[in-house]
Length: 183
Image (cartoon, rainbow, N blue to C red; front, side, top):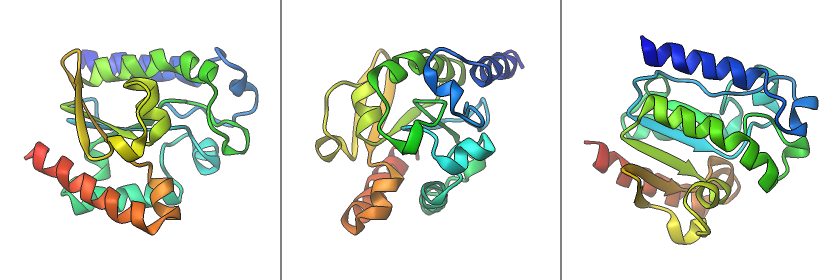
């Protein structure tokens, strides 16, 4: 119960955050969702238009594809924690600035600490570079990386997979690799 309360309190702080200018243009902050007991956490780049309107992560087309991928590897959306490195939508869905990432990074680190998942799945180059270091997603995808006792898995962002058929099939293969690790 203590972890659940910590997560709820953190999410309330995120909903009221004014650390960067994005709070002025958002409809809702998007802390993330899922059980505090999740063994797998998925981290995307930033909320999009539909996420900003609902306050929920990955509810647009990328979210539909992510949910489909989860089913393919035997996970339900309700069993994992889903969030983004940014908690507010950048205008016109532009790439987050380093200052915006720096402002939100502490929130993500607290979420990871509270939930303590077996694996943190990093979706896309911005997230990989922000949490692991300068590594191109084309070189990093399908790999695990351990740092400070934490295990990360790197793959493409679902939005890239929807734009490029080759990435879509690669992402499916990557998540099969993840599935084998979770067994």
